[in-house]
Image (tube, rainbow, N blue to C red; front, side, top):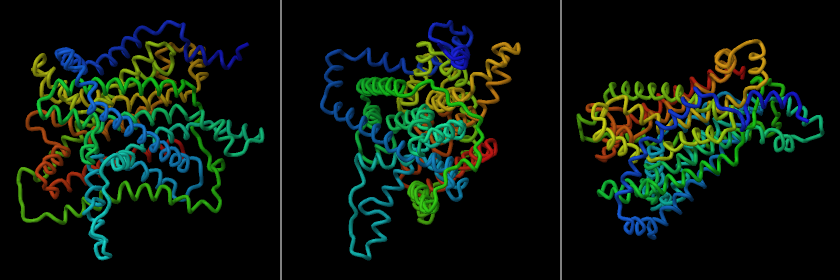
Length: 538
């Protein structure tokens, strides 16, 4: 017989046989449809390719190599992101690590560094004839080993994507009900056994959500594989578009979408709609005492932060000191570029936060396949390379909607398509952490469904909505291909300035905007984590 608590959960969460709320379902469906709409260009373009030619291109040896390389990059980045992000989250939330608040912010900051800037920095620092080799030249070392290829791409992408796993896992650990741990300990479970049997299953949805974002980012990243000379889908699609091979580019994009759908299906099987409920209060007396390992444990976050943050800042600082005699007025940084970047990023974050709420709420509270499909569809845009999304919307705007072509609303829409999953994942995790009995209690007291949502659910998921919107803001600030393709005429931003400087091999002009981009993004991260700490009493 089902327990009363389980019955309440089934009533509040919903079952597969229940009828979905019409208004919420239509709203979530509209959001999902809008997110996949730009991808119709790929199917229209692929449909025009001769069947024999399509078969030849799809099953060529080059295409197979690209597929294998992309899968290797995605798999390794996901695994290493989890291996780095989960321990860091556990150290900064559940232990008495020295300077915990400081490390909480610092280990999240690599998310503010664009991966293409990180790749340039590491090539400049550790390339065969890079800055590090110059320091070692006095010891007779004339050349360092190559850092290009799979190893270099995995290393750099992992450094700047593990914060996805770290942030989602940390949010789940903060809201975790420590009474469950106490109950496990009273049953004579050791710390490791309690973690394995209680903590890990409860935070698994958050780990899966962060791992999914890391995997999709690895699939969609263009800059790092290109700089590391590692052939993957994104790099080859860009090359084909540059050489007017749009047929092959469209077919490669469809293959990439097929990989994305498989990844989404696997992630859905791994995670569950298991509720991670708790009161969000974490008393210092319940933190794990690391004992004599307390200070040595700081080596872990210090090492990760040093490699991910110090190297790019070092290289960018060197670029600013090597201005040389070349002067280009068109490459000089202007403050309007920063204003443009912040304004469109804030608009994208606001729209994404609003669009994510109905999708996440439907997926978290209803087990219907339709709810799952709507949520999964919102993730597709995140894995589509920015160059593909940009070309698709250029095709749509130029041919069917010239009144919106090269306007700020179309640019913001593209950002939302690209980064909505960050808001959906964070919001959904927060909704799953709500104790269903709280919602049901408000219903018993006479509140309507909308009233319960407004008075109970919305205040409790506010931190998740803010966290998701902040992630959208951070990644929008760094987005390059979409900005280049869809920016309005005369619209210049920080990333377009960086791109122009790098395209002209005048890196000194890229240094200041790159440092400013990292600074603005870092401020938003600091404010977000500081507010989270105050809200949770950490």
